[in-house]
Length: 121
Image (cartoon, rainbow, N blue to C red; front, side, top):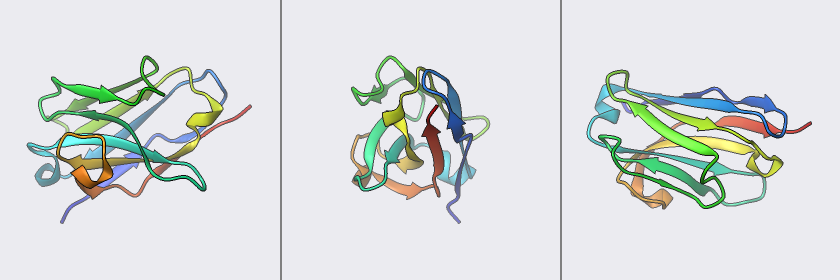
């Protein structure tokens, strides 16, 4: 059974940092790209970042470039999203996904349940 579990979300002040984790079953993780998307209330799900299976290729949305960093540890079947210099507009539910390398939700076959990130003073 496919299983992705995000963790690490929470409330943080503007300018602060959070690190999200996405733990996957080995069958889910192996050989696939990992992506992070987010969805704010009343808005469509949007691409944040993605990383290739071996971690050698990454891609970021312009809105997070230079502030967010994606990484993965294939030995632990876990992907990470380090978020620095957070802004109020980063507030959203963050989802990890597994699938083909790309910036569209349709490229990904499996999704986690999401973790809330709230940036507020």
